[in-house]
Length: 96
Image 1 (cartoon, one colour):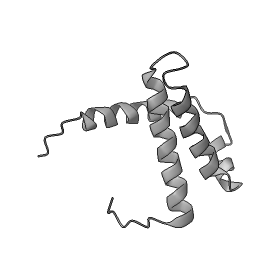
Image 2: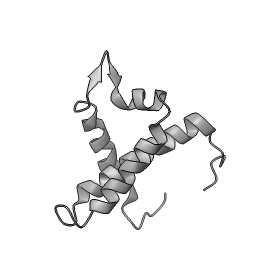
Image 3: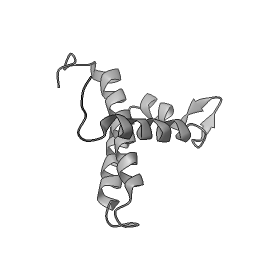
């Protein structure tokens, strides 16, 4: 068993809970998420990375050091990773 020093399992569980909660909030038409349409138009990577930057830039500025901004950055980073793998494949073969 790994002795995580930085609370990674707990933080990942919190991020998973946040992501799960977003599925009830997103606008959807015919059971399709807006992000799916953005990806289909070829703008998924830019949209996701733009939001990573947006929430990174506003952390510490809008509403102070807001934890929610960091969680949203991680969520959009995961969406960017999804688009990367979709468009380019997993090129690191599991090696980070």
